[in-house]
Structures are given as structure tokens and as C-alpha cells.
Length: 366
Image (tube, rainbow, N blue to C red):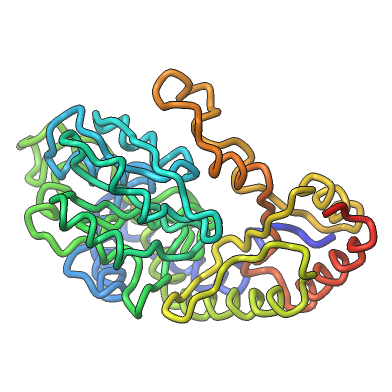
């Protein structure tokens, strides 16, 4: 059986270092907002090339707190991709604003910069972009739109640790770059965790308050904050895994190249561009007979996943909040299929997957 993801095997290369890190934290007696968090924040900021990093409890909290910290008028409109993971939309709503959906580019899965202008009104105050599947959005074009309309940019980088556009890293284009360290991410912890990257000193200071009950000095609360702190043990684990992030990205890019070379031509593959450095958190292909392919692969001992089976506007939680007509998003969600490309996936396994899919050629209905 070729698994889609095996976290136990993915973490095996780091197990001794992770054990040492855990023991160090346990023996320190300091478990919240201590040295491990501050050191990880500094190390991740250096990795990204930004001035500040704030560790928080999850990727969703990173988005919510970043939007809150912008201090834009309540009930403002924030543009967001119609096919993003629901967390991005939830963050906008939880922060007291209106998600205004914009269709993606069908080929890249990311928000289409050409569709932004027509969605902007006097209520629009920000754009929340999602670098989906490990590919940077076209921030060069999106920044032009934002600058022309005086809009803030928040980046959802939950799937894009290390991704680049024109040699600039995801999370460094906007006012705030929001990261998740959910265990399956390219930089994943052994539990929940998140972080916010920024070059804005005022935003950084406010976020330090907001993640800790609105307090930066004990018992002195300046804002209506939250309890959203990256804990010491997850920070220690992330410090270990950050050292290996670039090698993991290289591994995934090597697996992706095998897919590009050997997958059958009737599959629609991810788009590659010279000025984009993709990190392949997900390797997403598309086909009209997606469900048949899932069944075929499963019969041949290959596990897959769908990112994501239900578009946001079809979710019951959002049925009375956002409009229902998003055909490009629906098409992507109905045809996308994620193939194995984890830290524990081998080149041999990827070649096997390609061979199995090639054998489906005579059966597939185009």
C-alpha cells in the first residue's frame, strides 16, 4: 500500500532530535512563551527575511489575529479566493468582516488577479490571498491592484512554507504572512501551531498583545485579546524541523518532477512557470473522471485525497453568508485529485503511481 501521508514515517528522520527537544522543554519547567518560542520566532523570521515573527496557536488564529490587528473598520469587505480552504473565509468572518469571493485562475488554483478590480467597492479594505498547494499567488499583479486602491494584503501561507515568486518568499509580500504548522504541512509540528510574519513594527506590537489576552505586560490588558500562544514544546519541535525544511522541499520538488515526466498526458497537471518556485505541499491533478481514478488507484493499493471535495459556498455553515454561484471553484473541486507527495513518499512509489495511472489510459473516458 502506498499511503497518501504517514506522519510517523515522515518524522522518523528527526526522531532523536525531537526527543531531545521535548526532554529539554520538560526539564526547563517553562512551557508557555519561553525561550523556545522566542528562538523559533527569530529563526523563522530570519528564514523568511522579515523583521518580526509572532508564534500563535494555529494557522486560523494567525489569520484572525492579523485581520484584527489591521484595525480596519468593522464590517469591511475583504476579497478572498472562492476555492480557498474554508479557514481563510472563517477568519474574515470571525474578525468581523465580509468575505467577498473572487474566482481563481483555473490553471494555477490561485486567486485570479484579473478578477480583483471588478469586486472592489468603497467597502473593500483588504485582500486575503491563499498560496494554495504550495504555489505563490501572482503577488506582482495583486500588489499593483492593492496599491491602486489602498488595500491591505494578508497572505494565507498555510501551504506555502518556502514557496517563492521571483525569488521572494511567500509571507513577505503583504502586511502579514500567516502560517500554519499543522503536522501535514511542509513545516509541520506534532500538534497545532501557527505564526505571523511582518515587517510592520506597530502590527508586531499589537499582535504580541492580541495573542496573550490583549496583554504584553502581565495583568495589564490594553486590547480585547485572545489566548493564542504557540507553546514551548511545539516551538522546540519546529526549531528542529526548520533546519530540514529546504531539504524536504527539494525532496518534494524531485518527486514532482517524476510526476511531470511520467504521468499520462490526459491528466491536467499543475502549471509550472520560470519565475515561480513551487514547494508542492499538495500535488494536485485534474480530470473529469476523478472519482473513477480514485477507485482505480485504490484498487491498485494507492491512497489519494481531495483538496477539497466541497467548495466553501456549498458548506452549510456559509449558505446564508456568501453567494452560491462560483462555477470555476465548483469545477476545480469536482475534478481535482491529490497524489502522494509527502516526506515519506519515495521516488520508487511515485514511479509506481505513474505506471498505474498510465494503465488506466485504455479505460478512462476523456
